[in-house]
Figure 1 (spheres, rainbow, N blue to C red):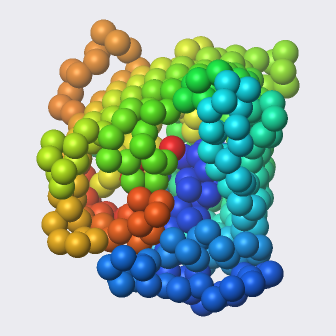
Figure 2 (cartoon, helix red, strand yellow):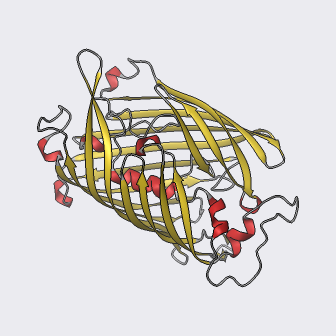
Figure 3 (cartoon, one colour):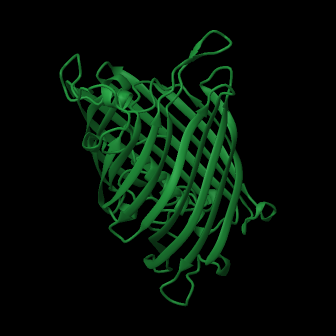
Length: 392
């Protein structure tokens, strides 16, 4: 079964929250509550447009209009994301070392896209400073129009347009170790979905219980983050491994496991040429619902276009800091999704490649923003990128 645009509501929600920080230029149209000083939009060093001081000093409530460019959501759409930011001062740990604290982010989200999909949600990403716990909580409701394709004996795909109405909840709590680059902890996902079919005949990949289903998954995660910044790194690596367990004992309609592994690294070949390399793998065990199977995540390929019980992805990119704050991007990747390891790589890899540009939008944060244009196996796609396309 090959699947097109087959993303769960939770994946769509987290993707929306990620791109919710795209288009920071719109910040200029809004005034932060409690702002006490004039904020310059020009950098003190080179005089270029720069939002560093705006991000630092614009405390309070900010409304962020957002452009959505993900092909899986219709290729065009918009979202409004009200956000409350609370800046955290660094602290000195018991070992005498300074520990930097990310700002607390609390907000909501409302989305409508070109294929008449819509979603509302709320989220909080914050830190419990004394116990050194990083946590995130997200919840939402979505009415999403997604297409699934079934492989026929002729080799062609038959399209099935499905409507998902889903409630979702996700939370993760990571305890930082003595070396704060390492953290680990539990996570939980709840997803309740009602699916509307275009006909009464079920495709072979849909089971009757999938039409109205509940997914309850308990898991854990461990990560190492040694990047020099979280937005647009120039060097360092980030490693993460996490898993989910789904069982009737915790209220799920399915008995399954899911294991995820990822490695992202950056290395400066020259002071102005940065190489990035990414490897990701996902493995499902048991009998998960068809909309929760691992999929390929590459620029130029809609989310979930190809699925299987296993997905493997690799991608390389280069950023050339060409002139002042402007950079040129080039990237390519290959991936495979399959159901049986004995048939791994039996068919040609799915691939994508493309180019784009970045502008150093906030020098003090090393934050770049731009646009990528990518060609996949079937279509072209474009993406508004905030920070990095590999933002995690």
